[in-house]
Length: 364
Image (cartoon, rainbow, N blue to C red; front, top):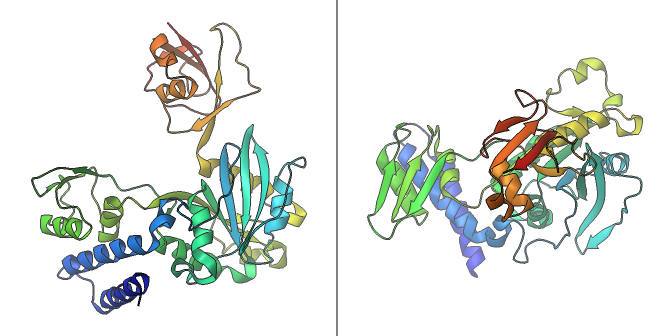
């Protein structure tokens, strides 16, 4: 029996114990330790896959454009039709066969941003345990910026099933990381700084110990509501991704059925151009990108033909560093124009957060 098989047996035993142990306040500590052991074993088993798809677990797919999006769905849900609808007609679309994984790429342009779209095979139940070459598909997903889950109206439950597989694979969808900071120390055992009283200190210390954090300071920046969030905050292999859910073939059902579909889902019939614009906007919002225009002179209009694409969480300091590290030392003032400015040419600090279609002039 090899090491991988031994780890799988240990995982199976721990999962059974978790299922068989009722969860309440009295068993919270024990559940936490079990889940910490489980997380450590899964990281050890999956290894390189949890680091974004390297290490031979995935495929070397060349990314291009400002961001990459993967389409994941069951056969015949309309992924190819969607890809052809949203990608630029001049883009080259080829079918690259990576032995067991077919990937069809295309390039979508929206609001001046180039977004690479990758059509991937679907994920089946058990993909997190590598059924149907699931780990290879998941490794490509983890290396991308956003995932689109597609199912037709007749197989809508598939989206919940595949969402669970992605969760089991360490992908956290449409959420942010818990505000927990771990400072490793050379000595001093484990210290817990939790002004929010999320858990009894002994629970945090024992969970940290199971995860190999013996000498450290664990600092909470918010109240953590459950053990799973605590573990997510202590491991380094979680991938936080935006997800857009799409239901296709909506022309095959009546309006009363459509009303039952959650509002956050894109309702689509690509053949009839239904939902295409909504899809593009949802992808744009999920990627969290903004367009920034740089002014060469304060009194001259910005060139809007070639925007700088940055994350909507970036600051002007980050924009400067994107342009040139040396430029940061040469400028002392920043002026902005656009819908987020109080008035045209407002002077702001370099900690100011960017907004879409912001115009900036950096000066001395």
